[in-house]
Length: 570
Image 1 (cartoon, rainbow, N blue to C red):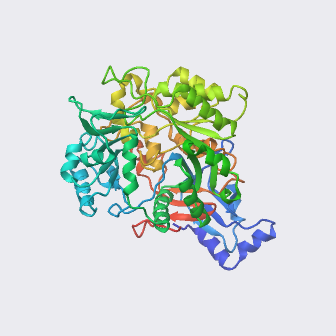
Image 2: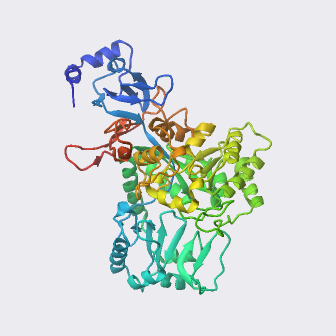
Image 3: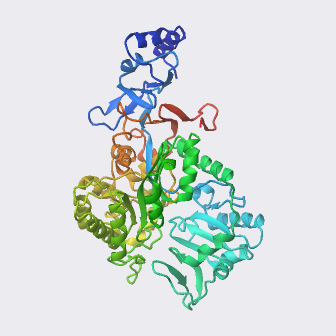
């Protein structure tokens, strides 16, 4: 909507009057001006404004409409926010981007999430049946993200055999830490009833000792099946990544942290960024490539604007939603089960974290169970014993089951945390941990109260990369499947949740001085929401749409409300 004042401004622009005024007063005209909005800045000194001016990718003014009108020039793009809610661009500080190939293509994985249409066991099997019909015999079929609470438990090898007798099939659980495979896959990988479990993983067996097809964590033999899968060309892969990044932009995400980066994916990001990808990438390179990172990160070819390579991702411990996290006390539904211990002993973890720290890099360590987390904190303390004042910002990724001792150790060790915010999607999986733990799981509120830095993240594809859904989850702690609240004491306010997803995430990435809030001198990254999340029912926060995503003062996504379909400009 354009009000009378905007009409007058547009008339003035047409005659060059405002541009002239701007230059005469010694001000450089803005490239983009957003006005008439409810701008929440995330800055305590000036928490709210109505207008923002951006020039050369940087915010130059924040204030009332009158404060920025003088910066309008003949080429300035003007956005009338029409009273809509405006926040800094969202930063997803832990996710796993992947190329979005068509599901039925030779390179495509089946999307087995509710968003992919899987709402029952029957819909899962129907989609698998379709994939089998277009896949040559012997070729691997992979499905990603099935939720056992939605598809009535985990499928078995025998069920998959009926649909896919002539193809190896691997269906990966929504946690990413357990899978179900068919008999063809077991045989092709050489997994028999006598195959021993490797440290940190488990082959589930029935009461007679036969493999059921359910795999907990990562069994090395299965990965040999990937070698015979068709590989897409670079052009196809790049376009599939572009497709996914467009989805991120449509959800208001302006920067992502890839929590499983490899030299190969870094090379793809380098190409995408050089080609104009507007989303910044904070790479968390897997620890298996530590030597490569130390050797290459300083080379000129990797000095690409928008790509940061300072963090090492370490997998230590297992999954909360996959029910493999290692705990001090047993799971509530099994007095003899404590989860799966990490494959790496304490000394090996200390040595690895020590190498990362000595190289001046940030360690980001995956750990969920309380026993796993204590091991990580021991390793951090061991690495930093001679330089406790160094701002290393080592991170724990997820840190899902905590206690007061763990929180105290994190605070005094200056450890940052990237907690889950997926109760909305996976809350029912917390049942196995028992009600006595719920107020100590996904500790967003406790971390804020303890003064522990936290950042917003989806852990995509574990949960959708939709920040407003994640905000709803943090605010309500209510599972969509059963309407139950898990951990009332860990609820946080809408304002806190939005700050975690912006300035909090920026801090975890050493970027709090350049992004994460709306302030002169910072990047011109803005998101315009269709509604004020403070004014809607809290169970509807996740339904709020992104109307504009602005990166560096450029509109890279705009929702076409009138036409219906959403369209991006990048």
